[in-house]
Structure formats: structure tokens, C-alpha cells
Amino acid sequence: MQSSEKFAVIGDPISHSKSPQLHNEFGKEFKFKLSYEKVHTHSSELAARVDNLIELGYRGFNVTLPLKEAMYKIGVLRGYDLSERSIRAQSVNTVSIRKEKIFLDNTDGAGFIKSMNYPNGFNLHKKNLLIIGAGGAAKGIIGPILDVHPARIVISNRSLENIKILRERFNSPLLSFNLLNDLNSDSNLNDYENTGLFDVIVNATSSSVSMEDPLINPKYFRNAQLIVDLFYAKKLTSFLRVAKEYGCINVMDGFPMLVEQAAESFYVWTGLKPDTNRIISQRDIFFE
Ligand code: NDP
Image 1 (cartoon, rainbow, N blue to C red):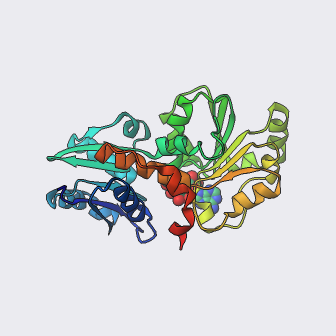
Image 2: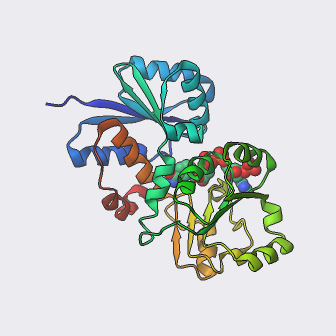
Image 3: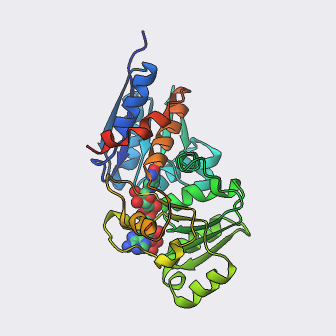
């Protein structure tokens, strides 16, 4: 009989995490015995926590805000095996431990691409994209989106600092960058109206956590075919609500991406592919 394998998610804050619920569902599907716990970990404790989880015989763990980039740096310093996708994002959300061999991966981008199955198998190929935000989530999804060959990606961020990092990291003629204030200025809106507005708009900022403001001039929503907010909650976010008011039919929050990136982590650890469709269609039980 298979003995129970130990997993965890580390981050700060961590109490809100749905990862234990998701991984327990995956385990049940395959009768794979596992425990999965939330371990609150402050940035200053990260290196010691990694050592501790290895020592305690954990099979793997997920890494969430704000530790993903720091986990990557620890991996580089210690010479752990790094997946191509973690190197590209320079951030890690999945750690696999097998007989003290440590493998670091990032499943966020794959999760985002797979989440495109939910608005009727939406294809990003040749689409004009606007990504708002240039933090960890944006860094994770840009590489896999470029692989699908969109027509172009405009990245708009509140401040210049993260734009500079992204510009250095991703060298593609399909990418252009601007400040959110400039995107929302009338002259820019006119420019975009002349060159064609966006087919897909992705809110990759953390603003939906607290803000009622739709973040961008709602005129941008007018012709879009798909609006995504990477944040997830029981209720529609104000960003998605305004998009709907402006006539967008396909709006999606980050729950499908959350489930898909978790399933991809589970696959990295176990080689098993959970039925994500079933879980996404039962989303209400995750918000009780
Ligand atoms: P980061 O802290 O790394 O980045 C935050 C980004 O949001 C930055 O670009 C920041 O801009 C911008 N921002 C924050 N507040 C505002 C505001 N009021 N107005 C405009 N821009 C703002 O966070 P992450 O990238 O890790 O996470 C972003 C979102 O994605 C979160 O909502 C998170 O929950 C979600 N997420 C969802 C996942 C999923 O599986 N569904 C996975 C990972 C993240 P600046 O650079 O100027 O500070």
C-alpha cells in the first residue's frame, strides 16, 4: 500500500490559500495518499524553511507570494536543477524533492495557457493583447504567451521599475511597454483606436484585491473578445464587472489558472494528470 506523501505551500500571507483543498481533490481522484499543509513563511525564513522541509521528508512544496523570485535565487545559488520555464520567469512556484535531488519549476505560465480552454477553447494566436501589470504573475505568463505567437502584446504598468525589468528579460519585437497613466490618456486611446484595439485584456495587477476602480479607461473593453482578471474571488471583480457592462461576453477570473497551475504541479510531483474540468465546474465549493 502507498504510504502518505507530504506536501506544503509556503508564503506570506498563506491563510487564504486554496492549494491544500485542490491537492486533496487531486489526491482523491487517483487514490494517492497525501498530506498538504500551509506553512506561513516570512521572506527572512525562506532558506531555513527549505532546509527544514527537505529534512522532514517532504516530497514537494509550492511557493507563493512574495517568495517565488527569492526561491529562484536560492535555487541558482545552491545549484538545484531548474526547469526552462523557471529560468524564463526567474521565479519558482513548484519544488520537487526526490532522494535529496531538488528540482525547481514554474507552472504559472502553463496554467494560464491551459486556462484558455475555459472560454470555449480561446486561442491567443495572432491576437492583440493588453497585459496590465508587470509583477510576478506577468513575468510568469509572458514567455508562454509569446510561444503561442500573438500579433502583439502591450504591457502597461503603474510604475516604471517593473517595466524596466520586463524589458530587459524579454527581448521580443512583439512586446511594447507603457505606463498605465499614458495608456489611459486620451491621445493614447486615439492612437489605439486607429491601430486597432485589444482582442484580449489581462489584469495581472494585484489591484482587484482592494480596488473598485476598473484600472483602465473602459473604452478599451469595447471591442475585446476576452477579458481575464488573474485575481479570483467568489464575486466577479470590479474589473470584470465593468468589462461586462461594456459588452464583453467572455470574462474569466484567475480560478481556472489557479486550478491548472496546481494540476501541473501535481503532475510534476506524481506524473498524474488531474481532471481540472471537473474541479473548475465545481468552483463554488472552493469559495464557501
Ligand atoms: P506582484 O506584487 O508581483 O505585482 C503586482 C502588480 O500589480 C505590479 O505590476 C503593480 O504595479 C501592480 N499594482 C498593484 N496595485 C496596483 C494599483 N492599485 N493600480 C495599478 N497597478 C497596481 O503580484 P503578482 O504579479 O504575483 O500578482 C498579481 C495578481 O495575480 C494578484 O491578484 C494575484 O492574486 C494574481 N495571481 C493569480 C494566480 C492564479 O493562479 N490565478 C497566480 C499568481 C498571481 P507596480 O509595479 O507599479 O507596483
